[in-house]
Image (cartoon, rainbow, N blue to C red; front, side):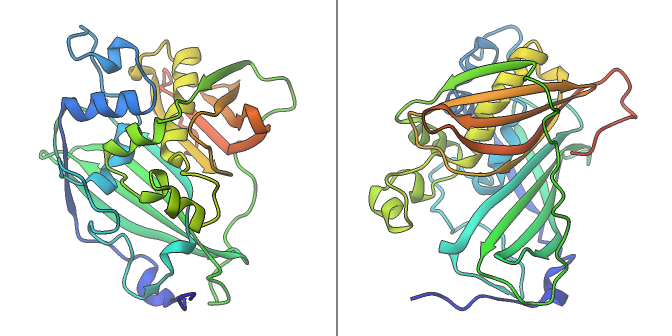
Length: 302
């Protein structure tokens, strides 16, 4: 049975969610690091003199919240604004970006504030854009997260089409760097411990029900793993050199497959795309990492 989906744009556009509290400790940072295969001691060993949070860590906090135990998927604070009725089986994570305003702290409790910044009718479905700001108890901005959620089949509601211009298109030359990153057969089972307990990534029955041959890797795990290639090649594995990342999710990865990250340096940005080697399939497109430039003023659009 398919659920009837609907949207009331007046209620949804510009909606500001209640602020939520998010919290994590150093053990959470270690769990995330091994979840994306970042096994360098700087990220995976707390006594390394340069021990740091992996810079994309905050992407997990929307689902984790402040919880230290398992978070039943779909039980957290609703990420749906009033006026929106959707069929959860039609929901896809389409886009994700994170922009850092300071280094990610090693632990703490923070306030997270989300607003709906767009709701576009893409013809095959709707794309809801949100922006989340994470601040510390002094009110300083740690990072901004931008997310695009796609609702398949939700269309004809009179919304703007939004831009469909391709972004972060690789330049017409061979990549400046290519990295192959293996994923483990149980990669998703490690990554889910960071807060995304969606059964789609662990339960065979659930995965086959929605048309996959087996549980898939989290898109945000593919983002984290891909970012490691840029961090290694262009940031000297130092998070101080990393300012942000933006990606579009094009297809799913099965744990155990090999990611091939192709990178092009363009000024302060590294444009990249990620393929699954075994299937020669693009899984991340329209993607870029912004490097921490000498001048903080001139910043590319993330």
